[in-house]
Image 1 (cartoon, helix red, strand yellow):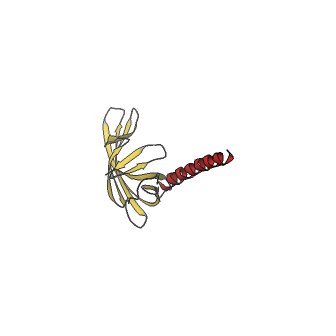
Image 2 (cartoon, one colour; image 1 turned 45 degrees about the vertical axis):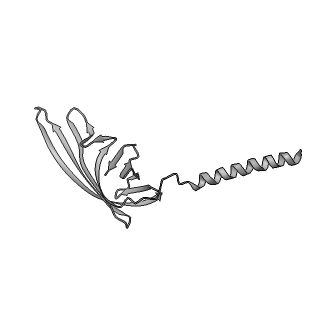
Image 3 (cartoon, one colour; image 1 turned 180 degrees about the horizontal axis):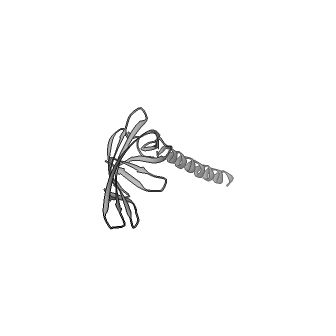
Length: 146
């Protein structure tokens, strides 16, 4: 009787060990992919560009375009163009177009996951998904590049 219990217990322990090994061998971050290349911003939070970043009764700011270049040496560059519309007290609207260039670095977290850090220390999680580069800001806002 004791031998039968021991064999049953051993089989159960072996099944748990095999399941744990199988789970540990799978990469939860997806297959190894490279983010290197030139990427054009296509959407923010699933909405096409231009994307409204901010608006109140006098001002509206839209993200009009963006390009991200990721180099194999761990450096990257970001360029974005925003449009600001401002209404004065007479109801006239003026437009200001601003292009911003910034440098960044990136490093692989594992599989298809990366971290991109801007020159001012701002970090975003990144991944390559379905052929797109997807960046997620700490706020949860998602930027998709093609």
